[in-house]
Image (cartoon, rainbow over all chains, first blue to last red; front, side):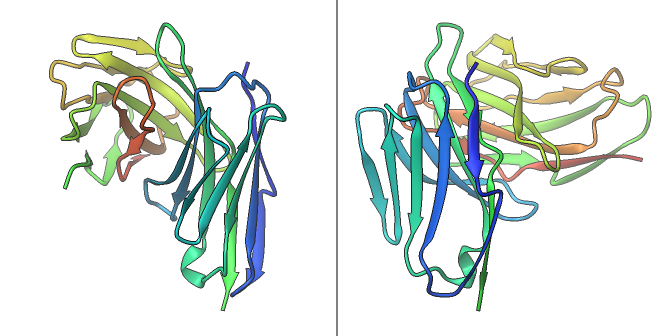
Length: 114
Length: 113
């Protein structure tokens, strides 16, 4: 059974500092991995999608890496801003005959202090 | 703009009542999903549908029912058999094989009164 873990569960940093969020998974036979952002009481906003054949994806200040062999992904957010305060979730996707299986980590709650 | 629309944003249910949560997408995605989110817990899959007129149970399907009569719509009914329905419900869709990832709606918060 796939298990996805995100450490730390919460993180508080001063504005301008770089953020490093970790995601680990137990089954390396994944199809792809997706990072989401969730603001309180809101839905999930997709940040980055990494295909299993890729090593990283970048979008603006965000960079996500994927190391399937070690079962890890890392989301880097450069020069953090108070608006980056949110919960960040990673999800791994595995293809199954009965349908895709999306497994979420528990999330990292980030607070960026001005 | 393409996206997923969930309604209502807030829903209150009395004991013993069935309620239906709406989920509509205009992304032309084949697959749709319902997740439940509780404080301190991760997202858990309730039901999913890969094509019209077909759906499968997820990890916590008991007390819920769904239908998929149209590609764009995947309503979730929370029945009276669901003993602890208070939660945040999220609908999602994907093109089918997940190669392009998943898109989520803004959620419905259901409260039992």
